[in-house]
Image (cartoon, rainbow, N blue to C red):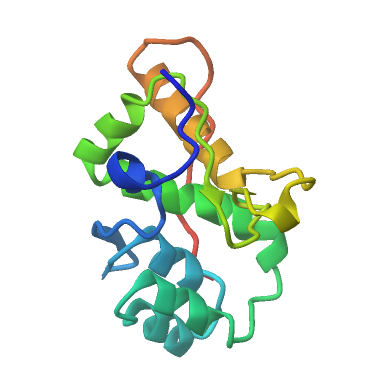
Length: 165
């Protein structure tokens, strides 16, 4: 399988903006983006305001205006992984689609200068190495599913799903 360099069209399900219910903390979240953005805050009112945003883009914009929890930089990657695990664990059809990406390199290609979670392809960023953390996490989760099925050898990595402070 070829690399997947954009989470659009048939691969939009890989995007954090993909609308699919995620159940966490006795609530239903519309997208991974809603849950991830809410996890940035200790104030339950802030989390609820983000949860109630109509779109993931609105949730992300609102989050930029609020005070981050003090441990956010240390926790954000672990929290993203847990949010992604819940998305695929709770939605078997998406889990199958992720597994069906086989050994494709998954890259969250973008044009909004995000070289931490993805890899920006704009002229301004052409000499910047994108870390593609989102793509890396998705590939790790896919590997875990393949290990569970006995299709490859290795150790499972992820445990607890506690993400809100």
